[in-house]
Image 1 (cartoon, rainbow over the protein chains, first blue to last red):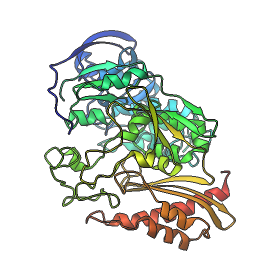
Image 2 (image 1 turned 90 degrees about the vertical axis):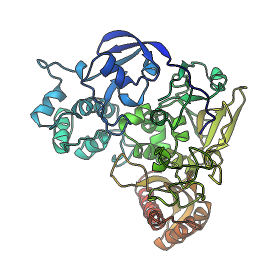
Image 3 (image 1 turned 45 degrees about the horizontal axis):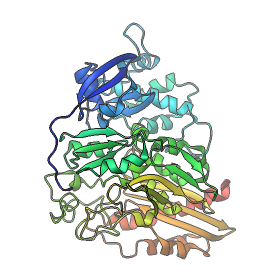
Image 4 (image 1 turned 60 degrees about the horizontal axis):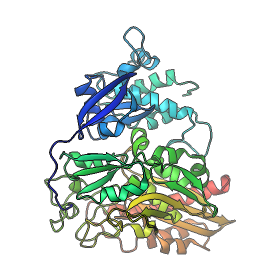
Length: 182
Length: 332
């Protein structure tokens, strides 16, 4: 362990965040994770805390359009960033197509992982649009990605579903993905 | 988590001086450091955020190599067309690691200096020489299934967790470092990591305040590149054994070979003896097996991880055969 130097007292910093299109000015303990800001300060409790160690994916949000684990990043590191959570995707009256597809395909049981699954799927589909390969892509140099079920499973492997609704989650995503094949 | 002060640096020249403060650390992706801070295994009093430094480009080098700056994200590097075509082992290794969310956050520099995932290192109720020098090693007599069989010591049998570093080792990459006095140096990746000996808390040759600024990939060596990872799950797990190979053949003869293992040692484990045993030999299973025997020469099983010795050999043979087939079947 490093030579222990006495820790400072609680440190508060001012942080600006845009969350679901709305700007916020916050005064935060530097230790606050992005997840805890969303849930405890902004009361956006759609984003869930599962493991708090980046292992389950329940906390997945989009930061500047990219999917990340909000539990494993500090809010102060996201000053001026644009965050989108499940609350920013659709409303009960006007669901996002992925939200509708998860209902249609019964892509959840308890629902705890669902916000993360949907945010992760949105980020993942954008990555496929960009032609990013994955671990199961036959040739990483190939330019076009065919979003097979194996590709969906691999690309969503950072989102764990304790209820085991995986087949229906894959079906929901396949349904929404443009050009997806079985 | 202990309280800490925080600053974001936007000029690489200021980073070293900022981190020379007592008990300060660099943070970039934070996907490993923040996890360790929550467990109070890491207790920095000050964080220097280097994630926004203008150090995230990939640039071709006149030598035919590629310079990958340290603040590039793992996902961007894995998806870069130059990496996918010329350094496919790097792309494959990155894509075999972590999850989509984590790769979007994790930096190339952070990937290199991430800490071991030894469960006893993470369990603060266990003794660990890496956490506290001269504390003891709970893994030696514990459930050491994931632990090292090569390069370890009686002080520490933890493995290095990076997939990418294994590919970098096979390619002979260099790490570019910037010191607080603005001097720079390059260290070959195989010289960058320290073996544990009786000082397992010293993991790299990084000096105080030094920051990784880039990875330098030499021009790709001849041959087909392949990274194979064997793990308990099909995805999103650390390696039990992984291997990066680069194999060139002329008809039935191997003309050049590179071999480096992950999951077996405290650092990416380059096998020069195995490479020599492959070069100039016929591309047959007997040749692969002879090289595999040399690759694990001196391996020490600690009980639960004895299986890794055989698994490493089989993984190497399989991956060599696969790389050769791919090399014959497609452009290199």
